Length: 253
Image (cartoon, rainbow, N blue to C red; front, side, top):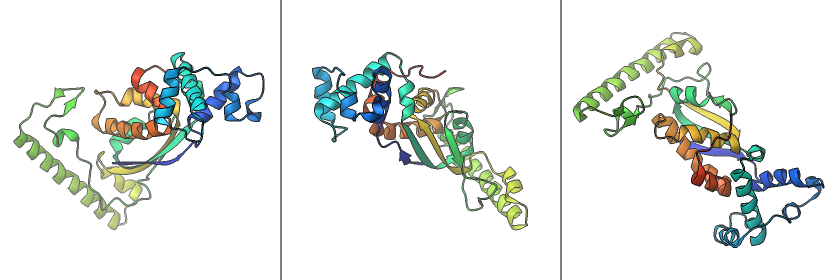
């Protein structure tokens, strides 16, 4: 699996703050610079020390970045999550199973494009191997820790690889015989890897992580969530720093 940021709101937390400050101003925030809309925001020495240490926004003065930190944390602490919807990010993901795709696409506030099995030929493909066939210390919500010997695990993994290889070979045979790919795909295993692109705002991303980073989540979607979280931390650093300290939080219905 590989996760890359395809695009994102370049203003990052500045966009979120500028939008939210408009809620409290008599003037129109569209006629103000970021420094002007943040002018009346209070901050303390702790915020200023963090701004100097982190310097996540080098284009801002230390004092303005401290105001940004203070304002973000006040909004989040009050449960004012709406402004987080003003900043969005797009990820492109390589090689996740159709099983993961079925889970992640249930998050309806994300937007998806998924590699099509109607148009793409999957003949030269190998199935993703489940973690329970690879890791002797695997834990699942359903059964807890694995209770299996190394020999049994190896035997089952080899059988899985044999069966899925045969499925891909039969798929190729169907396509070569003239069967449409949209019908030949019926034989493909749910572990077939696909590429996908998805977009969402910062609030939605937090909601997804609230659910999918849990230890009881399925291993593959948890791995995806952890990789996404690393990108989110660099994109919205103070927001996700707060979330890591206080989450999971109910920020969505």
